[in-house]
Amino acid sequence: MLFPKESMIFPKLTKIRQNFPVRVLKNIEAEVIKELDRVHIQGLMKKRKKIAIAVGSRGVSNIALVVKTVVEKVKSCGGNPFITPAMGSQGGGTPEGKIEVLKGLGVTEDYVKAPILSSMDVIHLGYIEDGCPVYVDRMAAEADGVIAINRVKPHTHAKGGLNESGIVKMLSIGLGNLRGCQSLHAYGFPRLSHRISQAAKLIIEKTPVMLGIATVEDAYDHTALIEAVKPEDFLERDHALLQIAYDYMPSLPSDDFDVLVVKWVGKDISGPAMDPNITGRGEIRALHDLFTKPTIRRVVALNLTNGACGNAAGISAADYITQKLLKGIDVHDTNVNCIASAFPEVAKIPPAMDDDQEAIYAALVTYGRPDPLGVKLMVINSTLHLEHLYVSSALVEEVSRKNDVEIISKDEEFEFGTDGNLVIQFPQEPGAPCLLPHAWGGIG
Image (cartoon, rainbow, N blue to C red; front, side):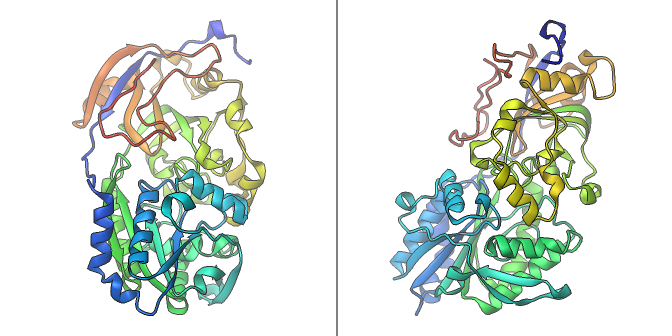
């Protein structure tokens, strides 16, 4: 312990709620079926039997239910569906690891009623601009049809192109497995978005891609939109849905403050553990200029989610972490991810303090001002869940001026347990069921 606990001083906390627009689909299954019928899946299934359903590694809301519904519909049209994990380098770059990632998302053979066929084997399809080779999962390429399921959202790095993260990225990087992911990233990030689009065009041209299922989430992580998209429309619809996703994305209630405490980080929260679209911090040196807001002087990460499966790539964006987070890191899986992305700095480990109390206090005494009680601080669940949060007294006046902010209670103690861990329970902890807005657990 670097600091005597009796000498640590923490600011009082105010509990607030951000009230974002609620856009939630009431019946996921009905919406999926409606969309599949709209694009005439029965006709698309003619002479197609073996259908690969591509599923990624992110914590997409309702992903297991969407996959299960697609499986049922494909079967009703006479198809024999199987699940192919489309997650690039995730799962440690192994077939078994990818199955474990899907299991953590609720996508199991027992639940979706279809076999999961996982392999790292790929075929080489050709080359795109700059001589970059394009690869695709062999089992998917040899199926009679491919249906790609993915959330459309702002990418954490591939900025500046028409498409960021969506069906197009699922085809080019997700279905590329480790080799395809590494190939596209090896040529650098400045034109990554363009390469993703070019690779997807080649994959659509040379493989039996028949359909995409795109989802968009609201600020509460609810499924807000589901759309079935034909391959010839992938790029156009990805771009259009991306604009909607930007509009729906939540944000922190201040653009300039001192300390951000993030309770949960991980790959299931965001590709780089914490979404730089929220924190304003990219973990890749060459891309720091992509993110200009908010300005945060110290970031503290407390826990690694179970859904991260030990992959802590991106944790370098934090200034301090905890020993318990450090002990949860799988070095091999993290290394595989950082090598595949061609940026070793994403696996750098910040100072690991003994417990939450020490990590937060270290941020308070190193953010650039001598008064811990005057710190402008926020505590959030994760960068994915921003409805409920805590702010220090020095931030209350600023955030209370926002129309969408509601003050719940003031002058809460910055409370820690006997183990030194922060005693705050948010309504939606990783692994907990999705709650509707305005439920509240609070401190205690």
